[in-house]
Image (cartoon, rainbow, N blue to C red; front, side, top):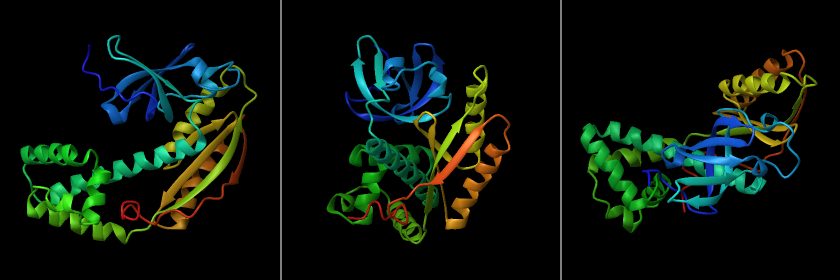
Length: 266
């Protein structure tokens, strides 16, 4: 048996597509140390799939469900089609929140001027106590008994408290659009679209597949204009590409929480 970190059966995971084949796609799980899993072709979509590359592109992050785990054979299979839109949205929000809070904790460690060895120890200690950074900051923000008992240096606790106050004042404005994107070029059209989407993501726009030929394009910023300008740049890039049929319509969003700290207050 390898040192692979195994997710639980039926759990939702963020999967990054690393290699696409005729029979499915190999993906890596960033939440599990880059563990490799396989997405079978039949689990990509409920409909008939003529070309898997119409649904997936290399480097794409997707939300999948773990459908098969065999520790002895070192095998994990996942499914894209078994994940609902609501489950996908919730998982992405949780994943992004954890990433942001991980960054805040690294910043707190830097502010407290801990040594590298001490930093590594503190990371292991808080994760063993709270499982993840979301739970850590939830307990810190609400000053729970569990957090009060946490045996970490006062300078580190002070740094965490300071970052909570600073980030509670920051706002994040989100915008989302539904895009129709396709090509009549049957030879290299999908490759062109996949390459184009990679360029769009480099402009700060998150692109997620809905169902062919629909994609969700979302962005955020410290104000509405910043978020919208990212979309505008992406639209200009797509519209300037020959051979691409493109339409876009703004998606109505529920009122988002204003900042990272709002998500962890009880």
